[in-house]
Length: 450
Image 1 (cartoon, rainbow, N blue to C red):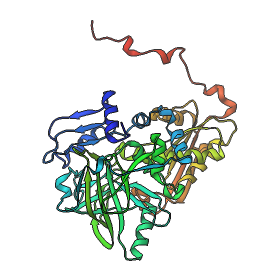
Image 2: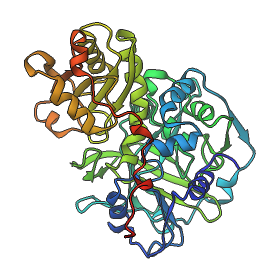
Image 3: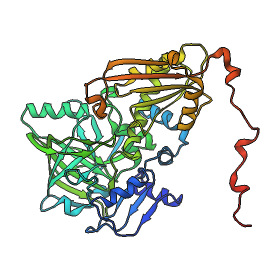
């Protein structure tokens, strides 16, 4: 079976990891509430959505384990796999037709009536598409760029699109200067590898993201030509909205509950006029709950690749990095190093803060600390840090506008915590250990049967 959303859902079913929601669910608030209950970490298939014949799925890639399963690797191999795909991308395979074009509508359609587009929060300005991968093409080099953008439903064939991706913004403004519409395709329901590759920084790498997805999947990604615009889309996607971003047209967008769990304000954003809707037989609508792990993790993984390599340039013994979900997958970095000389902890801090303006707080620990366990990291801070020696504060730096305290001044203070122990005192910081502890399984010993 081709690498697709459906093939991954079948994989989750075989592993008893996909939960079926049989009870009728309202797309206004209720669907989103169910995804939020699990922070978007539990795959759910919504079989019965009130007012619609189309089912929906969400929460499918809210964990590192699920991404690793999709790529058929171990969780510990994720960053290496992504790095290999970036440095050695594959190629796509153009097909004359594909499942995503089993149904084609070029007129008389109403997107809001066809698909269960959710309203998530109390103060959101309306229904939003949140899992739509926007496809555009560089008019000079022909490279295809993809990014997940949120889209507000304005009418039967009209969407407002929040464009924050630098590459997409530059292209759109160039078309607008010429007085031309910019062709875009909005793709819904894809294999996790396509979602992951869409989060690659165009400014940093300048790659065709479809080619990165091909390498992640392990074979050429099948694509088909759109019906009304000159773009290619994944042949096995569930739904594609073809359209044009109109020049010099703006529409109020927002407020909307954003990445960090706060409402973003209403702003004037470009408009996409949808020219065609294509979809598979019995399509599945994909949803990502905003601010959930599924929202943060794909982007965090791509940022971790950059972070790891940035730190490695100055501290070659870096072991692993983690951008936490509580920090939005961008603001809080935890770094594990195999410390060999004094000063490496602070060097890692400086490298991490320089890797991306969004990194706000950095904690560096020894390699005996599990950076994915918040309790273990806090333990290291509690037992290995003296604030007057190990905490660094840098005032007045660039930050992320998604974080509201940054917006009070337009700059952020950055902080680094060196939670590594002094090498001369290594024995004093040796952790207690029980031989054979890892092999002990509580379920082998405990019972409620008296």
